[in-house]
Length: 110
Image (cartoon, rainbow, N blue to C red; front, side, top):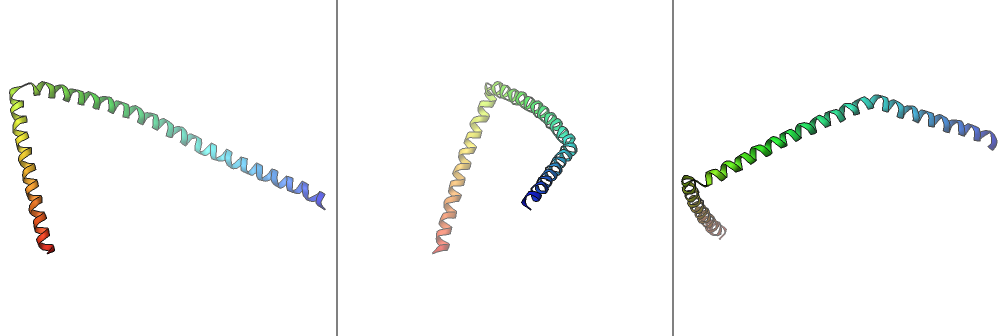
């Protein structure tokens, strides 16, 4: 009886193996074109991203050059000075507001 079961098991194993191979083959046939399209789109995206990066680098390099040229003029130096004063004044106002809020919180907590 053991002898007759062995060939049956082998044929089932072979059948399972053949079915598995067919499944893999069908998957590859169906998805392979999609994978090719996906890879082609990824390459196009990479090219577009490289172009955008190159354009952005050129744009920021131009901004840096314009900033360097502008920083040499007297008007820009005056603008920087007044902006610095405004920032200092804004920082002072913010610190005073924070102090007032802290005092009020202490008073409310008591």
